[in-house]
Length: 483
Image (cartoon, rainbow, N blue to C red; front, top):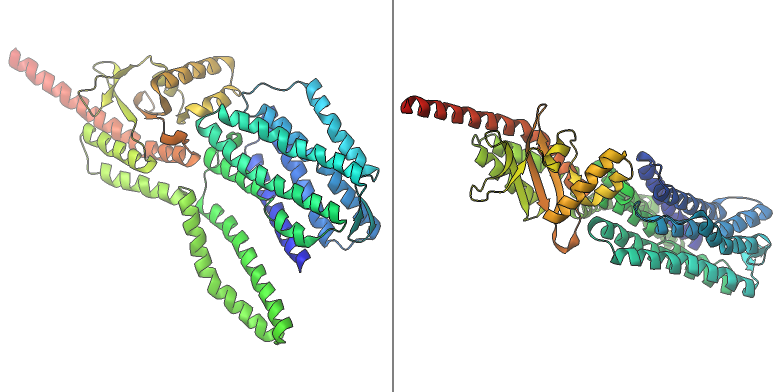
């Protein structure tokens, strides 16, 4: 039964890496940071897959020995590539030179060589391993330094020197990686000291090693880790979460079935009926629990649709431009839970974008302002923390423009800007301030703003035209009266 537990948790581990692969491949980028992270995932996936094959495959003993050796040889490659990734992350960091990367690989090469010549592990009979303790200690020290010391020190240093979205990304990677690797190293050392590959200790410890994959996926979904823009759709998140929870629940039910049959000598037919009833009764509350949990973690697509729908209903009843702006501002503040927000609207008479709706604040943006100029040719909301990533992927002229915008946003203490643009001109712009406690704007927040912009742009344009028309009529009547 212990091996069955190990098989279940290792299968979950494999599925977690598959999910990560999908996220990464959906938004492939040709930069060193991205490639290094992908290679880390590749070796991590290979390691857990080899582990799974060792447990479930009906294979000759000599092939089992080969799989075990490959397993131990692949392990040091994971922290090597992850260490390189940490040195290069984020994309704007200084890159380590090839010469130093090669020097860094020499201890890893030694660890692999010790495995291949049988100094670290040699299977003498099924499930029993022979270790040369001196060489295993050398191997284990290399793993600890590369798995824990190097990457965690690098990430922690970057955590202290970063802010906002990058800090949140590093936080989740640190938590997932440190817990996963610590447990995996402890399980490896335990098995080596006892010479017997014990699933009793292996299963519960390896069961948490998928935290790295899940934490990475969460950082991608919520904080655009690796600059991956994925809108979390309710069906996808619910489906994956429910599948994993149901798999664990079903396994526990099967475990109960086996124990009932063995302990109470009950007919398999009756235990099968009990199992079906347990699954049937447990599924609805499990589904509701998963939905509540996901809704508390993510602002899912449904909540975005509801917020935008509510806005659409409210602006349909407004005709004045100031009333429209007030409704839009209140909707954004409520959904994003922020206080600092500035809304600028086109004033054709002044030839500027002026602050609204407070007429006593005389802040304005000239039509030649960098923000206005940027949104004359772009649509996507611009998050300040994303600018360094965008700069690394665009031409020099565009990069210089973005660099100036980043400086201006820092000067004004702005974290996000978004323009409202018709086919002919930029008619408005919102500027969002920094959040409390260094929280970052998530990909769901950006998606919400994009949907809001699509709903209100032409309503604002019509209201501006109506206001300008009324003003022209007023001036004409005033002119006739004076004449």
